[in-house]
Image (cartoon, rainbow, N blue to C red; front, top):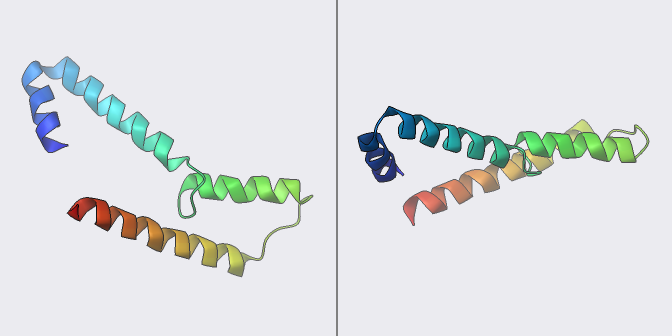
Length: 83
């Protein structure tokens, strides 16, 4: 990623700003995926509550799901970093 950013930076400020915008949009889209520990995971629980007629899932269970999702997400990031 840094090598690509360096190459883009050599092209000028406009391509660099477009590259930064692309990375920001990509991060926003990934953050909205319905994975626990991300914003999309919280949105999923809100929709689930709506479907259940306003009945909430126990905060303890929801916290456990988000915690496990967070650990899996961090594990995936570590795996990707060292591969």
